[in-house]
Image 1: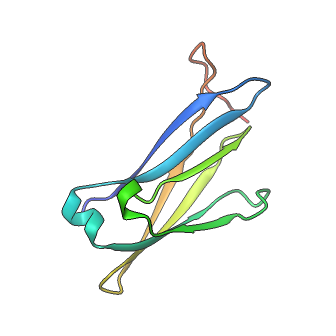
Image 2: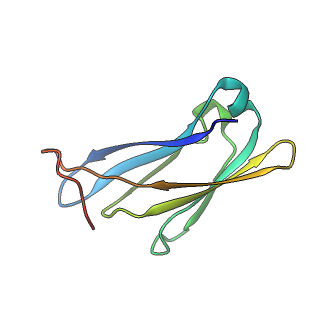
Length: 100
């Protein structure tokens, strides 16, 4: 099984971004996922977010101002569990990376 966490991001203004993360993999691999739980930074109101939306590749949409590691728990239909980590990256319009 070859699953990874992908992301996109869009700078808004005032040091604020809209971003999303989702699972990437073959259709066969994605079909084996029951649900995905994303553990966000503890400052989020609800730092644990779970989705079972296969049609959207288990996508989570969010917004914020800083970078942090996202811990990802993938629960498989066969009862297995995968633990992944994704370092959220945010960039200003000029290509400079957000370091906060």
